[in-house]
Amino acid sequence: MILNPDQLNTNKDDISIHKDQFDNLASSLSRQNIQVDQIVNKLANFQIAIPSWALGAGGTRFGRFSYHGEPSSLEQKLEDIGVIHSLTKSAGAVSLHIPWDIPKDYNAIKELANSLDIKFDAVNSNTFQDQPNAKESYKFGSLSNTSQAVRDQAIAHNKEVINIGEKLGSKSITVWLADGSSFPGQSNFQTALSHTQNSLKDIYKSLPNDWKLFIEYKPYEPYFYSTVIQDWGTSFMLANECGEKAFTLVDLGHHLPNTNIEQIVSTLMLKGKLGGFHFNDSKYGDDDITVGSIKPYALFLIFNELVYGMENNPQNPELSWMIDASHNLKDPLEDLIQSLETIQITYAKALLVDQTKLKQAQENHDVSLCQEILQNAYLTDVRPLVKQARLQQQGALDPLKAYRLLSIREQLIKERGKNTVATGL
Ligand code: LRH
Ligand code: MN
Image (cartoon, rainbow, N blue to C red):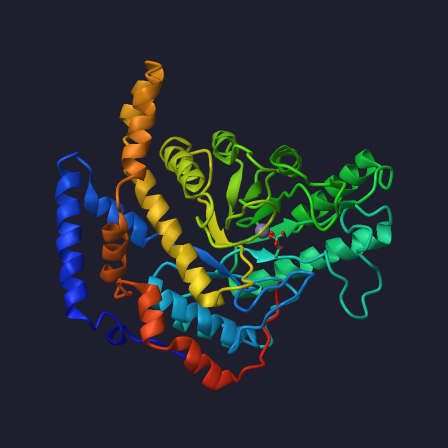
């Protein structure tokens, strides 16, 4: 399914209402010496990678409720991302998970992605599941396993993932390890960490010069007592040991309750070791639900540190922006459209923060004014800016509304039937 721009924004009233709202907001922001065009351009250039493993219905150990019309091939997954990108103009990249999404025909896949204006962001390795006919099992770990043979198999897999990424034009690999233990005494923490360090160094040696290695941390799940790469500090330490092309990846759902994630982000940027994000939201665990659906202000505080860091930390490279979600209830495409919208809105609010005034108030210990400056930006309805950025690129004024008006899910079911199942989580 390919969408063309003149199928969008057919309701002229919506356009004129938007114009009024945008003009009002733009004039009030200009009076505060805010460069509205700059913000709109930053939003237009802000592209977020869609996870190839989140285009079908997710599930839990208690069950999975299929969503009809799911993509059953990488080609169909790219088409679905193409639909989201046509509507939002902010989903111009895909993050593949290997082996769930190994291309059969690399040239065909690259041509299709190119025709849909989709780039290949980080590729993800998978040493948390055993593949059919695999010689070694990852049941008791992969890069940290006590068995050299298992570690070698996992290292070889990661090198294969880099090769696949190179053929597609990707420039980074994300390594997330399930490795850990579910019972006290089950594993020797030091041995597990040393094996992991040496295995990552081995993988790092195969990294092309212009590539990055993202080390993703997580406190628990699938194991419930310890995780080898449990927190940002462990990932940061492992990245430093590997070298200048290794960075920490922050998955928002990978923090214990009430963790100050914005402080972690600011620390990693100051140290030049923040590689990128897996955006999602959560109430309790790694729930992988719609971005900003539970803690929108926390996401704003994270973006405030990102904006400060992008202005003040040239030592930190350009970041990789990716969503990592699992859809148990919503239409996967609607869920991703809502997440993209929230990320854009939150970035826009953070760009309204007067960083100079805030720094001054912080220097003066004017605590109340600090909060006023932050919340003035947070409480500004920036949706006209996000809509303007989309309109400038022939996207939909209201992507979710357009998705429903065009009956895209119904068309996908007609094309693919009710029982197709997408690979992934
Ligand atoms: C682990 C994780 C990781 C992916 C997986 C799909 O929880 O966040 O990023 O490999 O989800
Ligand atoms: Mn993740």
